[in-house]
Image 1 (spheres, rainbow, N blue to C red):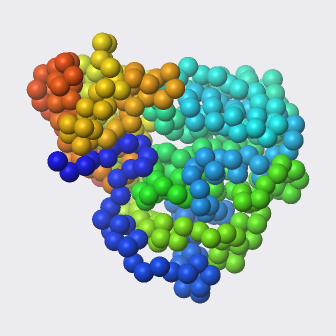
Image 2: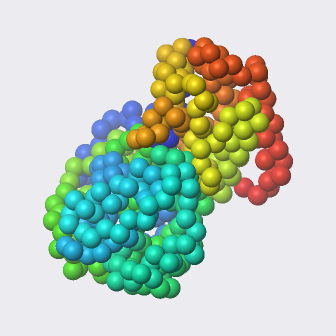
Image 3: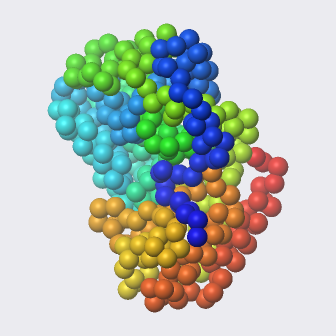
Length: 386
């Protein structure tokens, strides 16, 4: 069986992107690269729905998150972190590493927080310099109302908003400028649909004003240096050139089809997966699911880690297991990436077989039948909208 990848990062990429990255190497200080990098950076602004600069870093998304902390804050600053999963917690971990005062808003994993609930916290800490939170929490498959939360921040404090958009930019409806966001981080192996290795950080002018007074140590992730290089159509350090070539190809396809096409596609795939698996007798982990992925509870009495291993070893299908205390308790399947409804059908078929192998039998075909049924239902309801 050919390998099938359904992890929420890295995601499946297209043949066109693979072929683009197989061309001859381009030197990163050449005029050819400058023209190409300028074009790619312009497309990134459109990808983020912003007119602000979008920096490209050779790093993981976590590197972009660290840069977002150290460039706009100073020692001892108070920050509020919304922590409803592993990646929400990462904001607090980074902030503490640099001596910031962290006010964590701890949320039960799989649940979200309303803007009204968050406002009660903010009003107790109006001196906070930043609010850091995650749009799509990959560890739990949960979406957060960043538009509503950002509005509360803007109306009630001078804090800047710093957003983990790693599994939301290009995946969920997202409008950086319209929602008045300040710093947004994304990663290459998610909605951008290329291999891991690049982080993107979009920065508002309000945030850049904070950069002038930031006293936290920075060298490789010096955003002012990166911005100066960006305006010169280059990067301050050697970039991952071939990844940028793949990004250029991927963004051309993305923008030609349009944001709405992808938002609609991921919504359809996630709707079908959640409802189809629920009818089949499985339980979705998140109470406010993200369209980027579906986190599924492992049935009682089933070893989740063994299930993921059987799925991979017997059927060459790779999904993500749970993280931290959720190890062995959930599995996570991606919808973002170069996927369509037939890919989802192949996953649920392999899932049924793996459950049979482990001794927890589903009625043959029940999951596949219902995923297809709900996919058709969603697309019929939304025909002409994307």
